Image 1: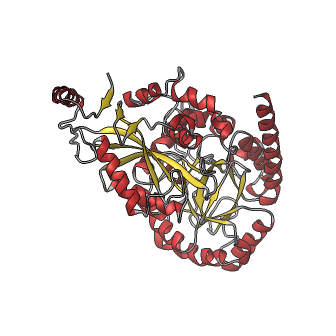
Image 2 (image 1 turned 90 degrees about the vertical axis):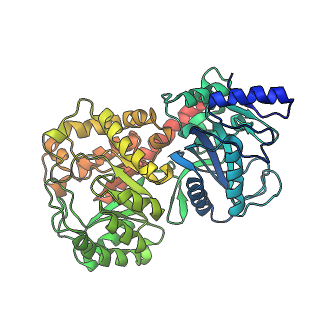
Image 3 (image 1 turned 90 degrees about the horizontal axis):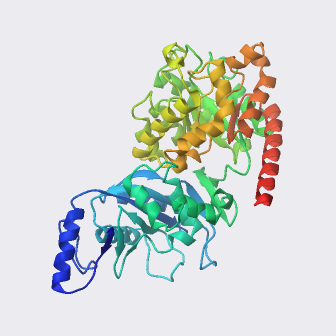
Length: 514
């Protein structure tokens, strides 16, 4: 029996239930949960859904998560972020929805009281049911148990009919069942295929972008739906020693001119790097990197042409990331996924900007040594190693909905490894999805532009590798890349547009078959 029932009943039944609950880990049991506090002696894994459609929705989420952590609810995983049309009461603003997995020693009703207090502290008042609210926190699952009382039902009784709840819930799971609690959650669905089968019956991924529900990433005070089209990120290296254009854009004037050109050619993002990460590059100090970066970053951010464009800073230093965001950068692109600066995850958790986590072994000076180039299955090993970095980032407080993944083409990879990546982007997502569907759905960035492996196939100097870059970008976009990082925006944008058109046509065919 796995159902916990909190009943007002005769004295001998209460005594029997107390004995049963002690076996499950409860040290005390009360029959009036709205006036008593349960004492719980062991941690339970829980799932909590979040929703908001009043005020600064993202700020409401951030504050709710902070209050949860400070109340004995230790968050271990985040779902993706969804913007959704209101349900039931439709004349109200759009919602953002997500969910988290957490562990807590709070009993079910104590957890409910804690969440209600957080809702109240964030401004929620009694209003119409399903009406507007600054924050909505619902317990979807509590350990392996079902809970039934006058004030609490777990699993939440309307999970199964709500795509805006099911989508984040599925994000929190992997395609592989990783615990007894997850196995129980699948069984609670009542579907022979578990939660996955139920989600398939609802429409699963075909619902994303339909039914008023979009998977989004928060950036620059807005929400970006990266599934609508591939984004083009233009490269601006303000270094003397980058492999392709080192020394070309050291002055503010030359850098601004190049940014103006890339924007005019259709760039959605500009990625500014002030430290070379080419093979065998020597590391410069934080101070030197900031000295190169800040005058140019400030000039680029103030350009009228940059309005509506996203400015990224390519750095593995947390101090540079912190300063860059304070000067107007919208996202941070870290080639080391936090490995080269132990403070990076902590800093990024507080910055509220997207974070690109890239796969690399070693550092730029060691990444191409023989040890770092050993792979038995490159896509599988990239997936495992990159996911471990992203998990650490999540546990450090960076929600999954702010993470962009990059398999790291050209970083600790041989030519054949880079080709395997371009061929195997769907496999990388699938392998990550075994552990976390949320991270497998994250935006994926690829950066093959003008890299050395292209010259080993098409022997040309770096400045003449744009045709090969276009071929690599085409393979990447057709394989599922959402952001392409390139030197030549104009030529690659045409390739991206054609790939997007092909993918839309493919999607249309698939929907018509269903």
